[in-house]
Structures are given as structure tokens and as C-alpha cells.
Image 1: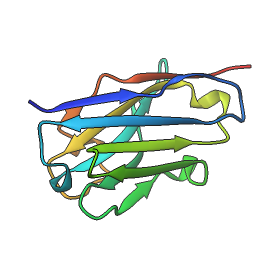
Image 2: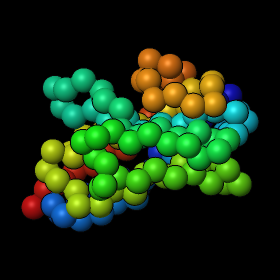
Image 3: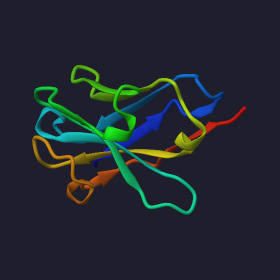
Image 4: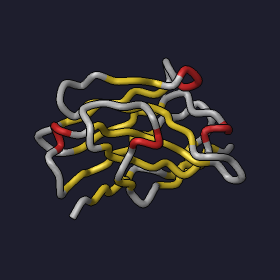
Length: 123
């Protein structure tokens, strides 16, 4: 059974940092693409950053490039999202997902989704 367990969310002040983790199980990590997505209240879910579990090739959405960094550790079957210089508009539920392909940045190609972790940026 494929499982994706996201953690690391919480309440942070503007300008602060958080590191999200997503531990994957039930599939061969290096044969999948992993991604981070978010959905703010009343908004559509959007893709943030994706990475190949095989070679670390990654994509970062323009709006968060320079602030968000994706990485993975195949030995731990875990993908991370380091978020720095957080802004009020980063408040959302953050989801990790896995796609049955080496790499994709397309949300519609992601097959498995975790339960999400809440990130709230507030002063």
C-alpha cells in the first residue's frame, strides 16, 4: 500500500522558515517523481516543486523559487521542502504526492497523495 506521510507544518511568523518532510512507503522511491503542492482556502491546489526520486532533477514554481527548496533522501524514502522567508500568502495546506514516472511537474500526473500538513504564516 502506497503511503505518504507529511509532517513539519505549523504556525510561523512572516519571514520565518519551516521544513516539511514527506515519508513515503509502499513503492520503489527511485522509480517515482515526488512533489509538493498546496491549497489555500478558497483557492485551487497548485504545484510548488517536484523532484525525481531517481536522480534529483527538480522543478520549482517561479513564485516560490529562491525561497522554497526541494530535496530528497532515497535512503530514507523521504522528500523535503525547505521554506524560507515565508509570507502571509504561503498559508495553506501542503500536500506531498507521488507519480508513477521518473519525473513530472504536472499535478494531474500525480497518482498518490498524502493527507496534508497545515502551514500558517501569521504575526
